[in-house]
Image (cartoon, rainbow, N blue to C red; front, side, top):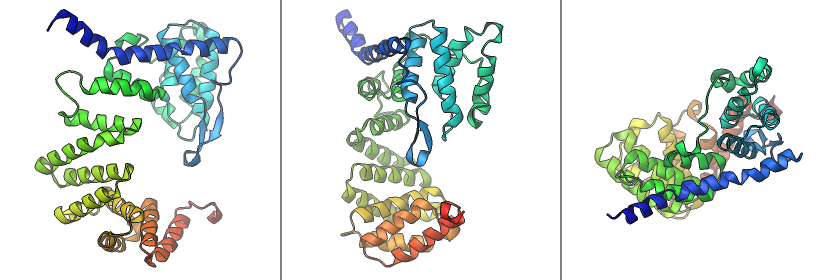
Length: 346
């Protein structure tokens, strides 16, 4: 191979990383705006995020700016201290708790100005912000401030963290063909690729990968691994709304595996849920699946039933017009009260 071809290949493989660097560099505008007194996009902005509870609308914006300050080695005590205190509000109030990269980056940057222990109180607040911070936050932790040290895999995960899906898509295409170990030939790498495609909304590209995974697992795996592979491909077809194929794989796993070996595991619950989702979306032609799923649900002790199993069972029963739906719904309401999930019951 000529030097020119090698250079071209290296340049192509760096395209995604260069795009990520340019994307991060755009944070310079946010930094300039912050210095001019505009804090609206990076201040703590609380909102209620559905079932997740209290969240911060500006978390990702603050994370992006923190990475810019880190990688471009911006020395600005006031900006770092301000961002740290805004991030601290999120750590203290977020229902999900967590630590996150933002507080780690800002901690290291703020340590540079901690002469005379000026910011020790803030670091102590961060340590006590929530349970996760109490267990895992360390004000002495270091973060690599050299962007160029990130390899392709690092860049993919960095894009995911920063929610740069456009750049991540480019990086994933480079990553999957990197080196001799192509993603579709290596089970561990293939699994990561499927996760990337799902996150990027490229689920259609996962079909052949799930089929390869299933074929390999059926040939070489144990019963739990085999049923897990069927579970994964059923969920794939549910995500792309191909209910015909999802139903087909539900029948295969029921007819061709000794699923009774995993009946007491959550894995079996996943299969049962998948079948009931198929029935709810495609009641015509799935009476056999409903007969099986209903029998399994009736045979499952109430103590082993849970929310998703109830709601999906109710939806499936209603779709096929089975009055069993009413019985399930009453049991579900009782279960919610027993678990103190309904405020009215408190």
